[in-house]
Image (cartoon, rainbow over the protein chains, first blue to last red):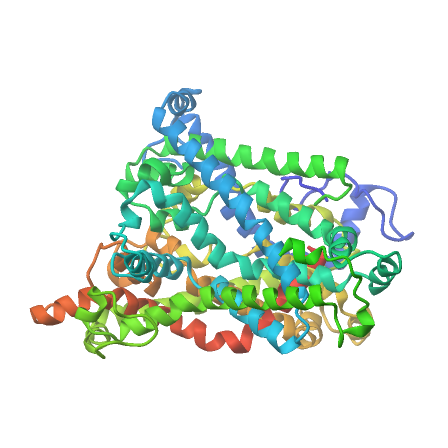
Length: 330
Length: 305
């Protein structure tokens, strides 16, 4: 699939000829091909104009807008900045100890999320797959999907209510004679809270694709495994898991790609100055630097750095999985 | 659990009625685990609903677990009298409707164009959309752009920048591709224009996917808060999610002045629970009926996307 950023077709006259030719009646030269396509399909192309304008203005223009990472920007001035300052802002964040702290926090949170939120849906899907009563299975699925549909604000609100000093968690601690803990104010608890609430919100919904993949596994494979004397456990290992491997790898690649973008909104809602030492991540730091302190260029430099790492991670993971297991996104 | 699964005896699938002992034990353990999953998922909701109806003293003492203790409706009454709450709720409805209409129009048009396999330049058009899934401009250039376009403090700041979700676009494209081409060809011979074919032939055949897309978009706009938080400067422009956000972050305490001290402490004890209940109520009400559309939509997207 082409990932070219060139803007779209209609007026272009010297666009490269399409890689695949659709049908024998296509004229030889690209120029004549375009003229014909335009005359025949102009109504279709006209439907694409507004959507393309959307992508151009709200997706590609901000990409170009990242040049303010290398230019001096003044609020109210040009969105592309005033004058070049080179790598000044890049140097600034690379020498900023706070940046490295939030970078470490991001790696921690992203890593923990990957370690917990990636495998749990797989386990849950395997368990659900063993349920024989369909009504029970459907009930468990319906309940576990529910948190996915709630706003992150509601999830953060619920999390804070559960962990409040008069909330259920402290209530349980009280039974065991433990003093109440102010979870939300303790930096030491933030990562646990974040990952816990992430699991609560995403584990159920995450099973959907695995459950779908599980239904496509050929029943004969299990039959054959049983004839060979494979135990239940070996059937899971040799038939079920290979059956859902493409799904696992696809989701893993996507997860790795969003590794650095750890739930920005959720962190923003759950953290507070007391928990910054563990909770502040790259995205929240650049949000405060940019929007709250008006250091737009500095924040844009950090954002660009983050986006590039994300792109490198996702293409790297994709390459790696294509080479090693033969499955990839593109 | 693992050791239970390794029990040697093979379990023939034909004899579900007489499973081996090890497998029966596993089924029992599995049942317990899944029950726990259900309880852990539901308990917070039950507890918060109970809290929202409970008295201040009982809440502070940590006595509320499954049902209301010291039944009290003061906070609900105060929130219902708070004009700002209603205003923000109204904003949520307005933003959701406007954003969903725009998003549906743009997504449908583009998905239809992309579904035409023989269209020249289709690969580029698909690439333009898909590339944005892996690389985005980032928060700051976005903020600068929306601000300099003068969209701040208007519904357009929420609706326009999120008008097309590439995932939804691909789901819809996959659906259009699965439609039989004969009908469209027949309509073309009958002299219908492309617009006519889309409106009178394709869309009536696509009611299921349109319903799913409307749900996807409206739930995500209903739940969104950050765009509004970022681009709206005045409280009366905020949606209900930001009202709740300001409560849980302690930025406001909710309710209007004029309440007595006793009322105020009651409100302080459970206004957050009340706001959580009121904002999630619409979603909880429609959830049982729409859940299957979401599941089928995600499947469609996963197969083709």
